[in-house]
Length: 124
Image (cartoon, rainbow, N blue to C red; front, side, top):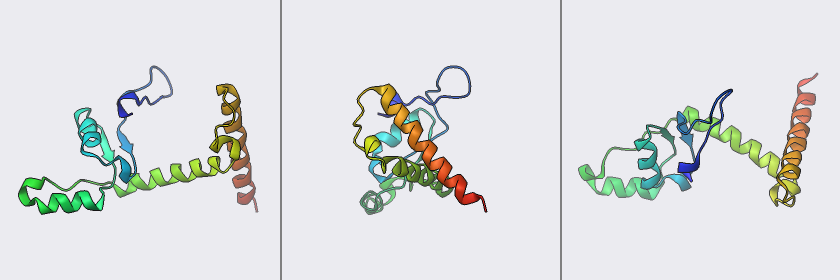
């Protein structure tokens, strides 16, 4: 999955090497971390408790503790909450529209609804 990551910028080809990749604890495998390290990408992934316990159990052979940037992880949380708001709409959550154009139109419509709702909250 990580090998297929492409990040679009304002112009040019999509970048295959982002500055950082944020993920949840399910993505904290040694393979994912080593793949990111080889490509010089910062991993913003918290470590599972059992992985930390196994590392500590090995003592000095267990390696260094995993670095975790809490500020970048907070940004991941913001994106995750937006995705959950989008999925609150049944058509997006179930992927009922099989045509990419219809699905994208649904995403745009739902995002517009969220934006308008947030905008009306901001107006006194």
